[in-house]
Amino acid sequence: MVWGMAVEKIKGLASLVSNDPTMPTGYGVQAGQLVEQMKKHGIHIGVLSNYGTEGNIRQHRTKYGDVPIYPKGLKPYSDDVIELWHNHHRAQHPRLPHAIFTLYDVWVYNSLPEMNTPIYCWVPLDHITLPPLVKKFLDRPNVHAIAMSPHGQRQLKGAGIDSVYIPHAVNTDVFVRTEKFRGQPTREFMDIKADDFLVSMVMANKANGMVHRKAYAEQLLAFGIFHKEHPDSHLYIHADPLPLTGGFHLGDLLKSCGVPASAVTIANRDELKTGYSDQEMAAIYSATDVLMMATYGEGFGVPVIEAQACGTRVITSSWAATPDLVSEDSFLVEGQPFWDEPQKSFFQIPLLGSMVSALERAYNADRGPSVASRQFALGFEVETVFERDWVPFLREVFA
Image (cartoon, rainbow, N blue to C red; front, side):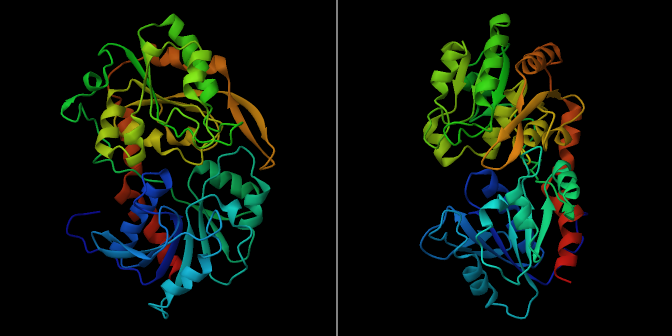
C-alpha cells in the first residue's frame, strides 16, 4: 500500500469461525491478522471461537477498534453455536450484507444444520487426494471455497469445486534476519556451537497417538543417520517433547533413532505454553542453517514462510501445499502414498533416503542467509496479501 493512500472501506458484516485471535496457534495467528485487516477496511467482524474463549462474549482490541469474540460451544468444534452467534453478531447491523468465514478443517462441520447464510471456507488441504468429507461440506449450495495454496486450488478444481486462491501471510517486518535472542547472540543463548550445522523443526507434537502427520519419526530417523556422518550437526525441536495431545514421546523416539542427547536442544516447555514472541522465533530461524519440515502433508505450513523471511532455507515435502511455498534454493524430498483410513484419502510419507540426501545438500550449501528465500517470502507479507488478494474478493462478497 502507498503511504498516504486512503484505505478502501467495504460495507459488510463477517463472522470468522476459528481459534481465538489471541491464541499462539497457527489458526490463531492467521485469524488475528485477518480480523485486524478486515476491521481496518471497515468490515464489522466478529470471531466465533472454537478454541481459546469460554463462557462469555468478550472484546478483542485491535488498532482499528474492538472486535467481539464469541465463546466456544459444547460440541468439540463449536458447530452447535455458529448460527446462534452469527445471528447475535448480525443483529447489531441487520441491514448490512453478511457472511460466515471459516478458518479450520471443514470436514468437522458436516453436522452443521443447513442455513442460507453464505459460508466462505479458507480451507486447508493437506492430503494428496481430496478427502470425501471435505468435498461433502464444500458441495453445499451456500458454501464457497478459498484455497490457501495452489495445490489446494488444483485439487478443488479436479473435484469440480470453484475456488479463489488466497495464501496465509506473515509479518515480514518482524520475521527478518535477527541476530539476538533476549539480548544475547541466539546460539550463545541456546548453548549451541557457533559452527555447528543447525537443523530446526518447528512443528506441533500433536497427533492421534498412532499416526503423526508431522512425520516426526521419519524425520528424526533421517537426522540420526545424517548425524552419524556429521557429528558437527545439531537439532533444535520447537515442540513439547511429551505426548500430552496424542503426539509421540520425542525423548524415546530420539533415543531409538540414535540421536545423542548432546546433539539436541528442545524448546522450553513452560514458554511453549505461553508462546514465544515473533521476534524470538525470528531469532531462532535466523540462527538455523536449515528448517526441516518434510511432513505427510501441509494445508499451508506457515513456518516455511517465516523461516524464509529470515533468509533460512527449507527442507520440505514435494507434495501438498509446500512445494509451491518455497524458493528455488530450498530442498524438496520425495515420498510415497500412505492411506489415511479415517479421511478415506492419501497422505504421503517422506522417503528416508531422500531426507538424508536433502540434509547432505543443505550441509554442503552456503551457510549464510539466502537472498532468494527472503525475496520469495516477501510475496506473503500481510499487507501485500490483504490488498492484493482479500480486498478484491471481499469487494465481491459484500457487493
